[in-house]
Figure 1 (cartoon, rainbow, N blue to C red):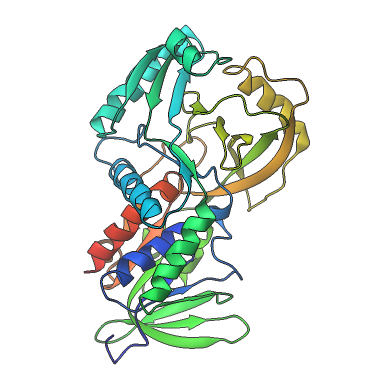
Figure 2 (cartoon, rainbow, N blue to C red):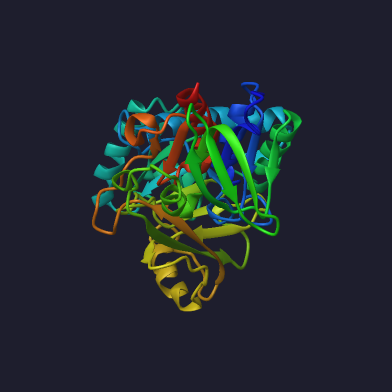
Length: 370
């Protein structure tokens, strides 16, 4: 470690992406500190999602989402295997629930091939129903590389790797600001029960929902390089009863999100969600009355959903950088070429497929700083 700095690199945010950035930097021989405002890792966006390993089907050709999702998925399975961690590579069916939706599957098929997604298959409705009896499918796409896993166990493994490399994950320590140092590096201010100041050569901000607030506390960060933030809430309902399908089931995407889908989670229970609602502030309540609309949507692909079988489960909030009527943008990994501060990478809009992409995002960030 350079003697002039307390740490070679500091990462703000100990969710999946922040920890993956810390891991990638530590694997390059750097001594890393990850600062987390909460008392435990992964308490924000990373704790309230679908825990799906995405194949990479949907994202525009050449986008960071397309490249980092596919690369991240491959890295993630290898990481889970190396750490002997459980997952289910159950595959995913994207289903057309009417003839009108078949054209949308054609577009997804073309995009998946452009994105180099392995093993894709086109299925007739009868073939899809043969795989998953009870499904309503006029046609389907099968993505065999999709799966589910335990995201918190994954984050614990990243935490362990950072510490094994000589770094630290510092909890209950909110980031309060940074000042660039003459000659390079940063002086940081952190709060909590024991406020502290420290220095680092490299700085990464990956705090999810507070990305804009964190960037605004960095001296010299141009305000016009901080994208507007929006909160995209999604709720989940759990099925009371036996899981009907083994594979993930997704209708075609909705505007701004992948839409309400089905998964058989690591515990073997059926979960549906998320929907999408823009809210003025993070809100993790689940209104039981939403079950009626969920049931109507679910019955498009599972007509056999019993009445009254859905129970409220949990809600998540996505750090969106687009509003309800705006096109969905790419991941934003902003380096010195955009904000003019050498040694800093600021991440914005890291929503789905951020969890799947996390190891590849970490590598991309480390390369930007090397």
